[in-house]
Image 1 (spheres, rainbow, N blue to C red):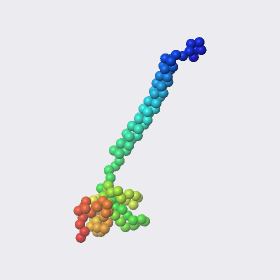
Image 2 (cartoon, rainbow, N blue to C red):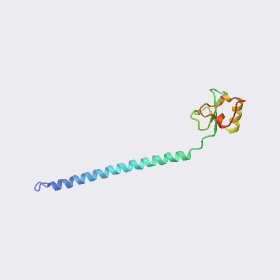
Image 3 (cartoon, rainbow, N blue to C red):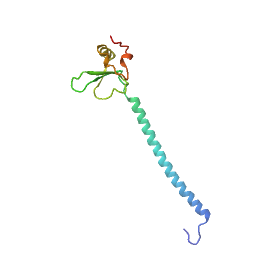
Image 4 (cartoon, rainbow, N blue to C red):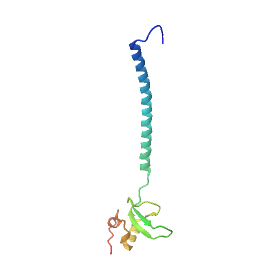
Length: 120
């Protein structure tokens, strides 16, 4: 700053404008990076959804332990069919299990109804 020539009000306003402009440019660059990061995350999420293998149509749940008996038959999208004791089975295997014991049908997804298995 020149000590001989004091700053005018107009000089101070122009200086303030430059500071605000610089800060705005930095903030916009930061926001643009955040947007790019979020777009990348969303693209990865969408790719993961598309690359996910389809859910099996029928699942068999076994009890705990080696060689445990079948405890439930589920449709593939059943919210109760979770965990390591699940095994993918064919529609025919699901029918056979339900014909053998209708009590194996999951009460949440009702595979007996979907397969039209009527207790005998």
